[in-house]
Amino acid sequence: MTLRLYNTLSGQTDPVEPADGDTLRMYACGPTVYDYGHIGNFRTFLQVDILRRFLHLEGVKVRHVMNITDVDDKIIRNAAAAGVPIGEYTPRYTQAFLDDLDSLQIERPEILTRATEHIAQMVELVQRLAAVGAAYKTEDGSWYFRLAAFPEYGKLSKKDLEGMTDGARVDVDEYEKDSARDFALWKATKPGETSWDTAIGTGRPGWHLECSAMAMEYLGESFDLHAGGEDLMFPHHENEIAQSEAVTQKPLARHWFHVRFLLVDGRKMSKSEGNFFTPRDLLLKGYKASAIRLALISVPYRHQLNFTFEGLVEATAAIDRLRTLVTRLKAATLADGTTDAMQASADKAEAEYIAALENDLNTAEARAPIFDLVRATNSALDQGTILAGDRERVLAVLAKFDAVFAVIADHDAEPTRAALAWAEEQGLMDKVAPELLAAQGLSDEAIDALIAERNTARKQRNFRRSDEIRDELAARGIVIEDSKDGVRWKRK
Ligand code: AMP
Ligand code: ZN
Image (cartoon, rainbow, N blue to C red; front, side, top):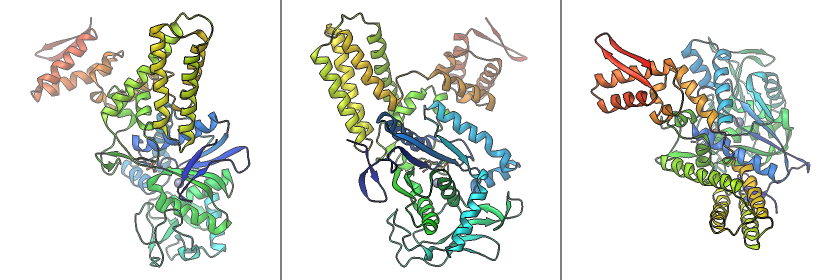
């Protein structure tokens, strides 16, 4: 059997195989680096990580390209508000994104490409589009895609756009219109905006153009799979298809993989709704990176997932059971040999686990047999009915689970440490859960920040919080002295 995935383009569950029989060539839309990513964004990147890890487990090589959108409407807006050029604004968020990938054990794509480093390829694509009559220039010097030149527009999202081409144009990067519009490929410079002097004029690329140009640069005109969150299906991916296929006359990607949203109280988690958490927020609340990862991947990509703190608690407990079993197995003194019962349990768990992932990456169904095996192994250990060969077999199945889920091997210390260092640097120590502080060494700055928070709490007559902070510091060997000159502290 091989992996089958739902394909938005065909509307069916299709086998996923490299066209060249060797390496699966895939493109995943990356982040827009105007701010920190939230866990909704990371749900999408995590599900793509599950896909690439499972392909590896099945012996398929992967060439995975991801863009970093480092020029777009939101970046220009935020950089202007911060009073810096976009080239100074985006690097810290690009780095934060990469650090968050590492925290969540998301493997880096083979190729990460920045939009601003591929302006030449984008300009060339506009020129090729113009040559086939699919792009035109407006009076202000912007370039638009001529929708009428691509009758297949709408084939991905299956929106019924027949007769809806209203001849109007849209120049913002993100829009949700039912009517199809000629969209901006290249935007003429506005005063104060970053721009490039090019053969098609002075301006900057539109967001959609970036992905087409970079995907084709690194994967060729036609590749195996294109991934992104469900919101990108229209218009972003529809536009990518139009821009590419109008020129190449070849399918941009054969398979389109869309990850359904992470919701909060039934609404999409998003920056604009203000209902979001970043991985850093959750780490500072004391949740482990592995729990965040497991909570976000345990519901298959085809289903929306409602984010809850109970989900994180459940994931924490589940990981604990897995890690405890591994420790227990490794420590057990077992006689040589194997038992039929344990070998059968392990074989069954492995077969069901692989089958569930091959069946449209059903992570929920893939988890279940692994936890059955955990239960069976624990009771065999209790009853002394497990031998050394069984241990090896169970550990091998758990290793296959971890090759994709990546939660058993414990990498939790570093993300938490990094989040605390970041909170300190950003002056966000008040966001840190007391239990987490208790588990970490406190710096002078962190203590000052807590004392300042205690002062505020006392002024607001929030004595519960002020006592909590005092107790917390006391537990860490920090003594507070209230005097008429204010609060002093010393280490015991
Ligand atoms: P952005 O940085 O906004 O371009 O988004 C990066 C990725 O996150 C895209 O693939 C989006 O589709 C995806 N995304 C945004 N919000 C959510 C959400 N609430 N749940 C899942 N994926 C999301
Ligand atoms: Zn894209």
